[in-house]
Image (cartoon, rainbow, N blue to C red):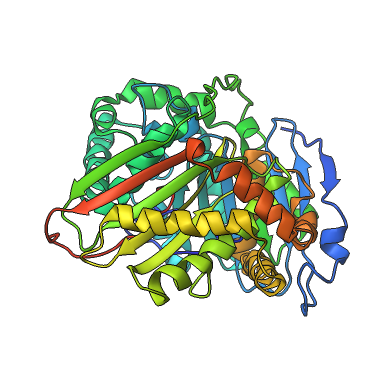
Length: 476
């Protein structure tokens, strides 16, 4: 499954399981009006989404968009907890708990949830990221109450039995081993671990294998009671719903769940990198891979817009600079791509990679990368290239919100990481304002050797199951 949350975001890998696919006092906030009125937001469309936010007395937030043209409704619940909140020795607990959320409650024993959603032709799943954990049900509008009841029940009544825990532990460990066996996933994991030394982004979302093996029932129950509470959650609903009626429904379903006290996050600050870092992976693989990553700011920085356009210039498809340079012209690679994700709570990474031809060594790929970077730092990009990249970014951003589910995902992610409420309104304008001088400036500021982490994958033979998983932030 994939959809682009921002200009170039890879979708989290969803957890696959059988059957996939008290009084009310509201503070009302309508998201900024330009999203509703601006013709640039959804050009050519008669529908301009207007997200509305309600906050309930127990701290639960509801964001809804009335979309009368959608044949389905997406009901999503986003918890502000992910691997960024995990402690040393307990990595992977966010993802493990996500698995356990499907093991049942006294009201909905194991398997009942799946059958209820399948019976109405719906889809239900979940995913864990570095910064949040989310669950969703996509159904016909008349069945929205099924998602509401499921999510309110397992927010407060998860069984968490020992037998279920051990069954899910085996599944999680198998996922973990699959990551380790996949050479490109292993490379990404090592690059992140090398680039982040103290920040929790050092750890993979799925966790380290020794930690997964030793997580206890008490650990999971404590984590569940700490973070799964209404005042740490946001419900997102997009579809042909009636707003006031939806508010009443959610109040009745979730209003009696008491608020809790979430601990203040204690997240170590990542020190400024002051020198080149290397990591090397030797594993059976189809072809060599070189990955280069640089520390950059997230959405809170004005530079994030120029970095987004720079990422697209470098690695936004077959017309990008890296693809043309490394695949078409004096070919040394069969693929060259990259990514930058500004919507993060913590510091971001700007990275790109190339899968080399069989006899090309990873250092050769790195030298070609460096030549491209030097050229960008030396000379401004052409007006035509810059305009093409900006149109590509804007198009991807708008397309990511065309579906009911995609718009819900964007709103949920923004709510979970604390993105400003006008992000959707101002994004296109800010991208259009990026200049050639901005591109040159951010390339000179961030794409420097002292800020660089390099990963090499050297094939040691042919893998049992030949494949190539594109490097990206590994989420579950």
